[in-house]
Amino acid sequence: MNSAQSTNTIMMVRPASFGFNIETADNNVFQNADIGLSKQEVIDAAIREFDDMVDQLKANGVNVIVIEDSMEPAKTDAIFPNNWISTHQDGSIYTYPMFSANRRLERRSSIIEALSNRYDTHLDEELLDFESREKYLEGTGSMILDREHKIIYACYSVRTDKAALKAFGDKIGYEVLGFDAVDEKGIPYYHTNVIMTIASDIVILCTESIVDINERSRVIQRIKKTGKKLVDISRDQVSQFAGNMLEVQGEGEKKLLIMSESAFSSLTNDQLHIINIHNKIVYLGLETIEKIGGGSARCMMAEIFLPEKNQG
Image: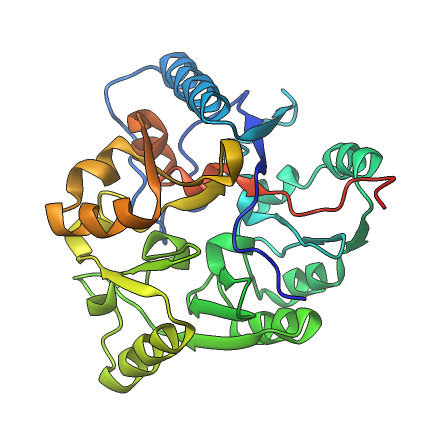
């Protein structure tokens, strides 16, 4: 049985200590240390943006599980849970090897327990062994899953290791399509989800970031074979987080495409037209989270595909 591409339920972590993460700044060029706000002002602004996002998602019929971040230890990036956890229709919960030591603190057993209390689950932590070998795979930041066609798309980086990627693909029985993707300065994109989004009917991808012509052609042809419509975005649009979107199901299983206001504003009329044929666009003001944290709407949502307990 093929999985649906999107779900009606997502988990989000309300931040307690949001801020600039110096441990990830070298390979996440989207982060900015100083935007003229104090540390507390940054935290307060991020919480406002988070709460507004939750409210808008709920208003569109999305089921949002909000987890409160713990105050201690401080976790600047807890607002981005999709990097350390993914869930699957068969009840699997996978946790992932993280590049940054301070981000490993986000893997809280209490969150796993909360999900297990509500859903039929089984936890797989075997990938964490890669951390001791300095090999990393940061969840659905590193990987874009075509759940319907069982394909993993991933651009390699220090935070997306080939061996760890293959190990996960073998675990879940997905085809792995890896490639190299770089920005205009030749720096590898740290996560695939800044350049690529897969929805039920469309794929948003910055094809120019895949500089090897053969690799680019291979990726494009694989997308076409699935029957999804390709929306090609530029590196400039990537810098506005136009690749960092997520399809979720709203009221009546309506397909929503969640993105930031920055991403929405960067899209052309032609791109918007194609998206609007297939998805209702919901865009959110995430300026502080984007500038300080270097992540956007997709990073803030961990999809919940788990089966409810006592079903059937």
